[in-house]
Image 1 (cartoon, rainbow, N blue to C red):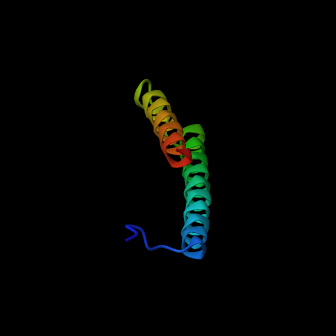
Image 2 (image 1 turned 135 degrees about the vertical axis):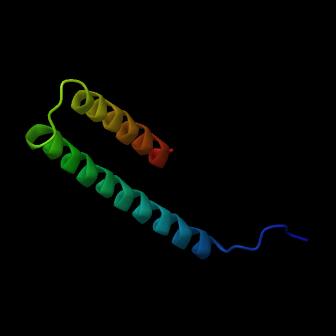
Length: 70
């Protein structure tokens, strides 16, 4: 008796959904990074905090993209 009951078509459908979700997440991360960059470039200037925030957000974005890519 088989332990696995998903058809090839079902697996293809889920793979397609996962791929689309990955692309959506990547796009959202790019949009948010752009917004943060704009904030840091125009409105958020401090001696230390703005630079640290930008560095931290950049690291977060890079890490999340790596996680999404697997």
